[in-house]
Length: 218
Image (tube, rainbow, N blue to C red; front, side):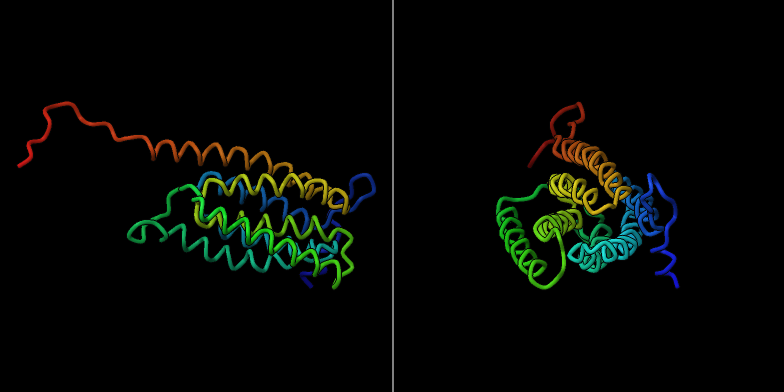
């Protein structure tokens, strides 16, 4: 079966096995974030393949909230794919924008509620050994993905915050290649933030007025 193959060992480093799901998740994950930073629409199908691989990986590692999160990512990936294509003015391609104050408040409230609810659920209903960081990274990732579907430049800050927690979390759970992957993600997020901010600055720059006499108005 495909699941058996994905959970099988691809190679070993210092006695620690790396599964095919983790290896393929590494490759598709790096490609996905690089495409997002460059605002390429192909990031969405690649991202959907990536989260399906990570779903298998996280479930076998006992990271149940992260595994369940991948199901939501598939739905958000389909939505983001459509919204990037038709979410702009007059159903044109979406452009980079900023997160408003009211939207920030709504995101903060949603993040706190989601983190608390998942923390309680994981602590009481599963054998998770890391309920709080698992819940917190799940909430941050969902908020970041929402921002990504809307091309909000601040979504990169949310991804950076999540990655700074994910890296030691995955190392602690023995997912060393995935920890390295999220270190790469962190660097790509910084590059993505710079690229999207540069795009915003270009959009905010006033258009040059061609030389010549001012137009005559009636």
